[in-house]
Image (cartoon, one colour):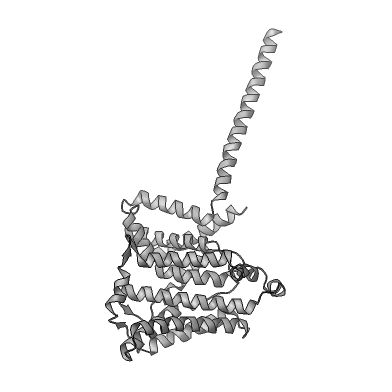
Length: 339
């Protein structure tokens, strides 16, 4: 009888121990899942990519290399900030790269061929970018043209103008003070990196703390409901396209200072990278979701991938393939973290 009781006690203890083990295992698993879900998909992807490249290359995880990454993607990042705003309201801007080219070419053309003071020609170049953005906004709102079609048309027109004003040739010989900006450092930090971060902070503040900025989410979610709520949707949308054009022109200035020249095709090849940055950052092409933090993380993912593959001597022909795979993985991680 005592043996039977003893066996029963051991059996009960074993079951209780196994239950505690299963409970502990479930708790740890759930904790890991909750932590993973708490980290945004793009940020998780960035961490994983950095870990991989840090293991593969001893030159990756250095301060100098990280500064290089920011410098290499500064103009793409500034264009992406404007493109993210456009996508947030449910639009699309295919002209950002062409706006960069035409604003920079007009700036250089006025300075070289007409003797316009460079400071003034720079302001005119920025104005050209804002004007193209205004045209995009008017065509897609008051003109009731699909943003894809409207910005495709302005992209073609801007590309043609950039080639026409200088017969397709580059313009060189900018003032020394301008080109020196590309190498200027403030407390060891490149000026273009400071400008990039400042743009994102300003846009993020506007999106999160200003009524018109918050209105972008309402318009992207449901434009008709936003209009019935008293938001002047047309005015806001035009303003967003103007901001996107102005930021593209600003990106052109950074690129021109770095290269000490203006090329009529500069920036045009960056369109896909700009859209990829926004999409990797978690923004929905349908509008209504996204933000500057996600876009900035998407920018870093693109920059780290390009830099890391260059350090590993990966063929430039294979780099777009790797970036394409990274886009898919980042989006999948983001979707998973939302469930």
